Image (spheres, rainbow, N blue to C red):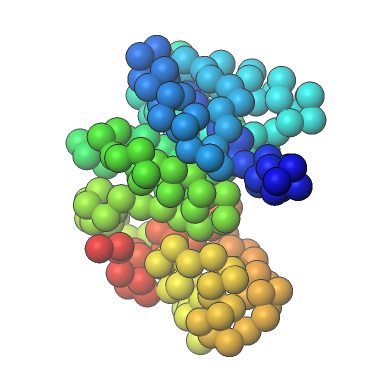
Length: 228
């Protein structure tokens, strides 16, 4: 029993909650804290506070796995905070919290490096699933708002997918569906290392900075259908 508990402790997902409303933070802390594989290691009321708290945790050798980030906050908002975190600590994932009416902000958050988003009225289980997906390197997009974000891409963007090989286009399409490197490898009967190499090549060729941006490119170019 002791060994099992030790193993569970090492596999818990460490989370920082960022929201300018204290009651929201307390609520999120309460229901995420009751989930066995979740551990709340910090809170912040705005982007500046989030960056400072992460700096403290990193300095202590306890970098969080993922940040649950509200997008609309005073001082530094969630989009700027997401960009800062993604640039300074690329291994720390960010999941944005948004409302259905904030599709433009959701799109900007994804381009800033967020690993997906959940609606503010989502069930606790969906929030937890989104955090787990982010830590696995996958992308969680709420189905309804994903369609709106896709429609919001008004101006064509020259992603240059014609520079990709046939296999890379296949991989990009699967990234757009939110599959991890391991799942892509299984789907295409490749090694996980080869799948990871393909993703890296895709990012380089398309001039993209993150897997989330690659997923958006896949949807925009018609290589993947939005979830749902």
